[in-house]
Amino acid sequence: MKCKNCSEELNAGAKFCPGCGAKIEAAPELCKKCNAKLEPGKKFCPECGEKVEASTEQGGTSDAGNNNASQSEAQKLFELGKEQADNEQYADAVKTFTRAIELAPGNAGYYNERGLAYVALEDCPKALADYGKAIELAPDDAEFYFSRGLVYFSALKDYPNALADYSKAIELEPDNATCYNYRGQVYDALEDYPNALADYDKAIELDPENEMYYLYRGDVYFEQEDYVNAFADYSGAIELDPDNPVYYKKRGLCLVQIDNRRALADYGKAIELEPDNAEHYSDRAFAYELMDNYSKAVKDLEIAYELDPSDERLEMLEDAKAEKKDNSVLGKLFGKK
Image (cartoon, rainbow, N blue to C red; front, side, top):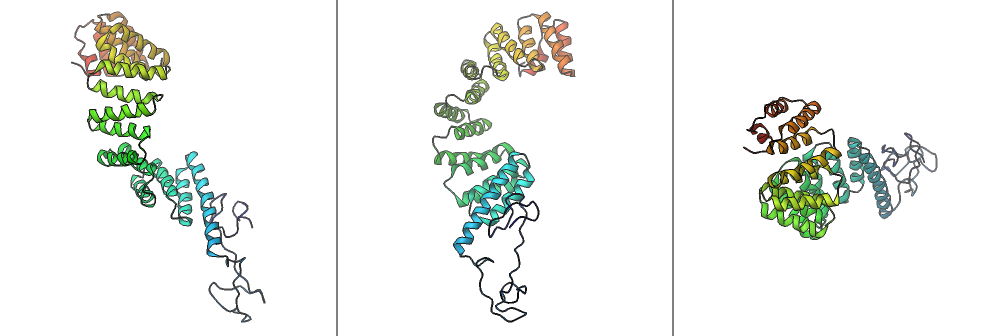
């Protein structure tokens, strides 16, 4: 039997096409004696009065057989939904996952994947409902708490609920570095720096090759004006990923507080890696002005203004040209007086 919509071969008992997801209309059951169409649930043929026998071909299979067929069909739909989601066809993915859930409502993973599609569609209430259902079905699976925590944290800025979900995920998977990293970000957002640092420490202990964990911990140190430890963490990130300009920019901000000349080198590396980013030139101009080297500051600010014109950059450029010792405009940019 083939799908009328896309000609895909169909399994016996299939309710939806695995190729296009179209609903399959069941073929009518016929009387074995006179071939008249039988109405569902009737015990006798309306034409000849023959008693209707249950047909294994027309749905008389055992409950176990029907269940197996439904599970198989649900899995095919689930895989189709994941493929649609991978291709950013999120609305289609939601529909396909919904059909899979109708066939296998006890599969927590199906709700989780539909929740991810809802997140991509920015429908947070439905995403949270799906994650909640996944957790109800599989309360010992850390992945579902992590997924829900991500919605609370990133989309809704609901830090208490995010903290609760990440903590539960860690309770279930105490060796999961990613969970510690995200809980650390929640603590950072709550300005609970000691707990943030503790979680980043644990994430690095579990996964010392992930440069992002050093970056996040360095940011916490920087926020606390601990430039020595911030410098060490940004250096750790650079060692693991030497081609990321963000890490040089971050370390440059630390070095401005410690050694302006070394800061110039980091800003220069950031410019080398990302020559079209106006911020890198403004950063280096700030370091030059702190060294009273206004001619080089002017050159960098001219490039920055050319790349990204703004009234603020123009004001900074005019100040540098006038060799003003008061770098309050630049100071505002970097959070200084």
